[in-house]
Image (cartoon, rainbow, N blue to C red):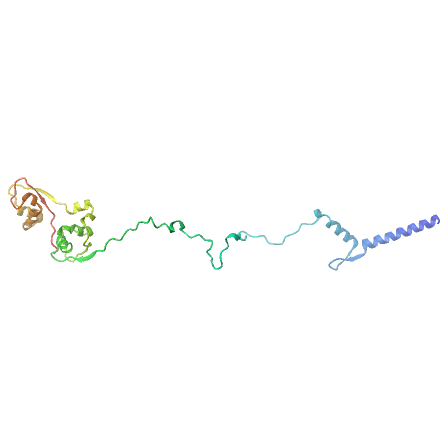
Length: 239
């Protein structure tokens, strides 16, 4: 084979290789979507995808979760029973709900009985009829603090305490105030009548002074100069 033939064969081989390269690089090839492309674009796409660092970032189209939209955590250990919407709620005042043993129960006061004052009544006469003892009039006075026990008026409404009420229920200071008496020293020419007229405005009430001073006078109404008498309060009958 001559040198000319060899050159010709080499040129043919180069020409064939060029044709193959041209076909691979520039011939149209359909992609996955059916659009025509060329070999050069396919090679470029493959070369970009082969390196992860050269890939474009992935865009997330999911809208951001706003404030307060986060789902509540689910506590699988304490699931509420069906139909029981308050299974996980604590009862209020649970600490004090069962603590009733130390609570002091104050009984209500005993009921009173209404009474309308009649003409001629005094607290002593009312007490004598209600309690059986006129000395317990202070119980009625204690139950009616806005009523003057010495000056009742017909038509007044009183509250009578229970018949089993005792004088011990009245504070000592109030008892002394209600039963407070006046001290009087006998002077020259005094008599019980004159003393009753001086304090009560009526001399016929001298027996009140006589009864209140039995320990001094005894059964006698004779007065002695300088004698100290107790003048009890006088309850005027209602008119």
